[in-house]
Image (cartoon, rainbow, N blue to C red; front, side):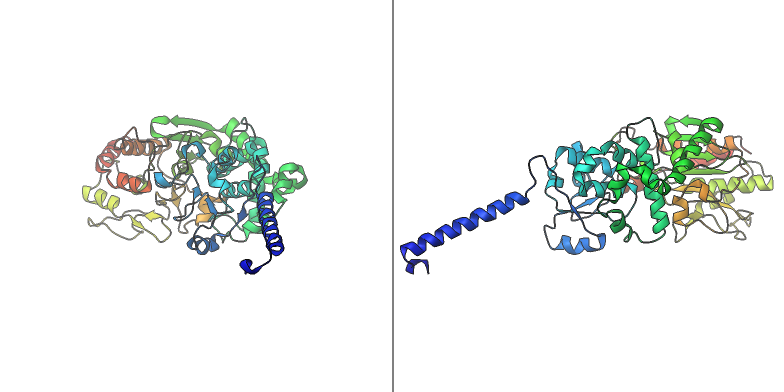
Length: 457
């Protein structure tokens, strides 16, 4: 015991204790980032997150996704109290991470690890930036454009960083498909260790020409699409409906296609010969910082109406003909399949009036409105997988409709305007709960009666 030690022994013990405290303090100081330096976070696979989070203060930051027990930097819709501070918000999650790095926000400085529940361009840029803060700040213009191009597919090569940002997105896409799988085709777990390997993405940013074979083909496809859009395309905008109509002789890469859709949230693509697709963009799936998208509208009733019109054109029936019983039944007979698509009754099913709903193999189907990018299109007997719906239009068949182009455009535009007439004009953000209530409260019968009475086929 200290009380029994001699004065010389006590002096030595006190000196040793003081030295130990000093060494401990010095070690903590050396481990602490220097003033102005940014901490490198470690990556934690999503499957291990819950175990760490339940253990208490795990120090894990979730990016580009939501977690009930972790701090998050994400543009995904969440409750206001769970949103990052307003000064950190951006259109992409990568914007938020880079803003936090610039401002040395405590949400990053207090974290020791980062995680994400999926792999895509914005997710990767978010995670990589948190793990490589100094490189991220030096390359932030490129990283911001890369994430925007990858997530929203909106390309503007006039913006700073966009040229290399496009190459980076093409590099990520090509290597992901070549070595692993397309998005939504398989698990993402094995992708993270490969792409986050120290120096791999750094090397691309420092010298993209050295790995040209990993991005050049898709990059050229995008440039070819831009040229097709410029020389052979036509674009019409209906801002009151948040709608843009793009006419092209054939499908092109998404990055080129959506370069014409900036500021709009719903796109009608017409590839000639009645080949249409209607897509609700990812801009409505998240919360944007730079503009306010209109509310996501459920296209379920529009799909039913289009099937009704296809049958009428095929059978030569007047637009306003037929029994009211069949019309109401057709609109009400939609059902959801396991994959989330909706269809009318299959050929051979009959309405209460004894009349077949649709003759023919193709029919209009649409994904649920809570999908990341619902696609309304004519489907054949074999429905597209989610990976095929997410892939470029050049990679999937597009069937021909019998509905004339001007009538088709008018149906979509009037459908959206009817929905928006029920929405509060001043609302800036929409939660998923509010969007469910908004869509369930729309009375579609007035629109259906008006659309049937309008000149069409």
